[in-house]
Image (cartoon, rainbow, N blue to C red; front, side, top):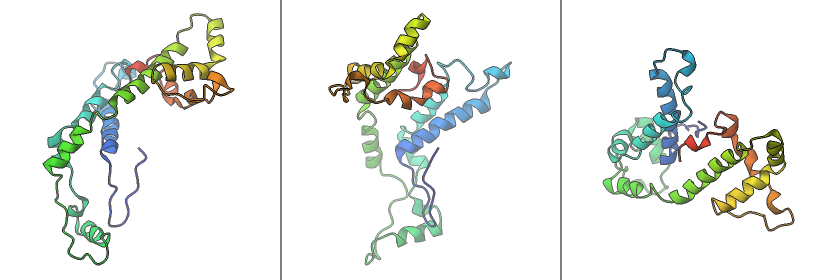
Length: 203
């Protein structure tokens, strides 16, 4: 993961979403560590594509459990004396009596975080459906000539599905029509083993 580097007196402070991502990747590591297979080719994430993400999804969900958040998180000023000094140094000048924050998140803050879990989820699911449908559409041609024909307008396929599925409009009303941009060129998971199986990726 590409996380922010810590500074003297202040550690890297991860956002909740970054911690979920960290645990997601940890799920792949645990999957590899605990796998017991007869043949090494099926070890860890070299399993059925539909199952690759399951351990990671389970670990991500831990960070949506209030008791886990309260037991594993704390304000960085409690980690060491140097971090406490660093925290004090970051307070506004002229405020020497600023009270050190509570060590653990309050129940109210955890409840407020829990309330955000499904915020924007519908749009996120539509976006994932767009990606999965694009993946299946470009892998659907049965003949070489059909595949070559689809490849001539792969950006058009991407953009039409983006409007039809995710309801996100672009520059299709311009002179370029449906072939504007190349958003599909950023769909890197198709090159990393999820071709014709992106539907199994976590939503």
